[in-house]
Amino acid sequence: MSEVKVNKVSPRSGTGVQLGDAGDTITVPSSANLTVGGTLTATTGGGVANAALANSAITINGSAVSLGGSVTIGETKPTISSINPAVITNAQTAITISGGNFVSVPIVEAINSTGSITSADSVSFTNASTIVATFTLATDGTYFLRIENNDGNAVRSGTALLTVSDVPAWVTGAGSLGTFSGGDSFGTITLTATDSVSMAKVSGTFPGGMTLNSGSGSSTLTGTESGATSDTTYSFTIRATDAQGQTADRAFTITVNLGANNSGQFN
Image (cartoon, rainbow, N blue to C red; front, side, top):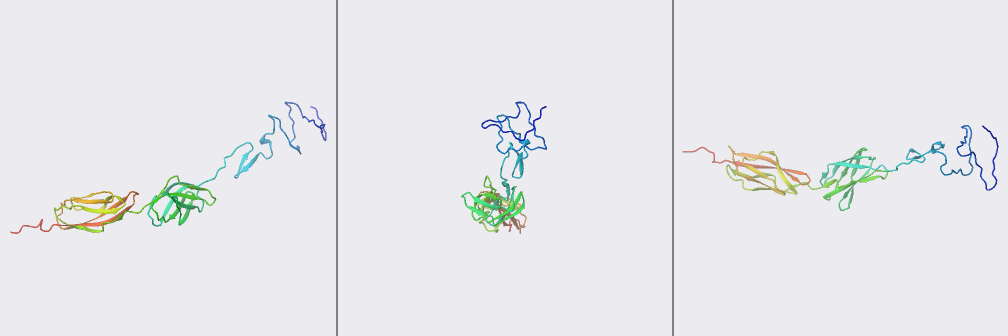
């Protein structure tokens, strides 16, 4: 092996200096330094491996990325998976929103299908996957929800998750629906509640022979009395339900009076 020690190698003007031939390896010992004051240019197929550089990586969003590598740069946006309840009235109501990536304390808005925006009265941060937003929404309709974290990342629900609707409003007054003699027809007793799509008895007892015919807006009680053995007042509760599943209950009574129908015979 040949060894040449020089302090400086200077080519003639307009020429270059070549170190070694093809296939040769030029080694700089670990205890030595190779200083380049100008530009170090690699020919096609040559160069210095990234891993061999003293600084072979850069840091992006707190993570090291090797030179020549790649990284996907994205934002951590909140998500919405569900809400409860999904149907509310115009009264102030607390809504639990489930999702992910919530940051305390986010901005929560309800966006009507017409485009109007209403901010939540208050927002309570439970954890990164649960928040509670309290709304007072005066206009019936369907609403999208939008959540914006304090870092500016935001999400809007893909569908109108929230419905604001009035509960059924009873038109028929509570209390007695009448007094009937034993064995008589009840005729047609109409029960009316606005926005109702059905009615059902949820407690109490009908007189024997009475049937509830459920309808939209109004329902009827019909039939012919049977089975009473003494004067009896029957109490029951009817529940009206609207298209959104909201309900309103009302209590009623019907009296069956046997009078002399089942009295003993006098001679």
